[in-house]
Length: 136
Image (cartoon, rainbow, N blue to C red; front, top):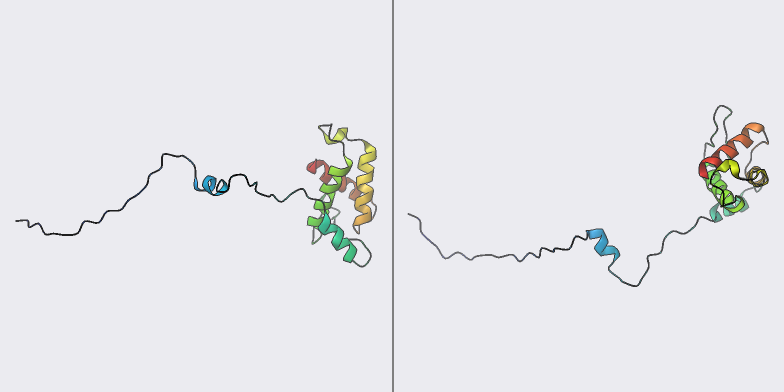
C-alpha cells in the first residue's frame, strides 16, 4: 500500500526566452548608445619611446644570413615599426606590393636601417622588403 503524505511541493520558476541572442550579445548590447572603444590604429609610439631611451638611438634586431625574418628580442618591434611605415609611405590605390613605387620602398628601407642596428647589406634590404610585402 502506498500512503500519501503531505510533503511540501517545491516549484522553481524558470524563464525560457524565445530570443536567440547569446550571452555575449546581451553583454555587448547592455548599454545602448555607448560605443565600445577599440584598441585603435597602431602608431608606433612604443617603438619611438624605446628608440629614445636606447644608447645610440637604434634598436637591436638580428636577421640571420640563412633566413629572411627578424629574430630575437627586437623582432616584434621590427615588424610593428615596419607595418607603421608601410601604412605611411605606400600608396593605397594599388592592390599589389609590386605596384608600389620604388621611391616609397626605398624610403621604408632607409627608415628601417636608420631605426634598427642593421648593416646595410643586400640581404637585409631584401628581408625588409619581403616582410613589407607580407604586411601589405
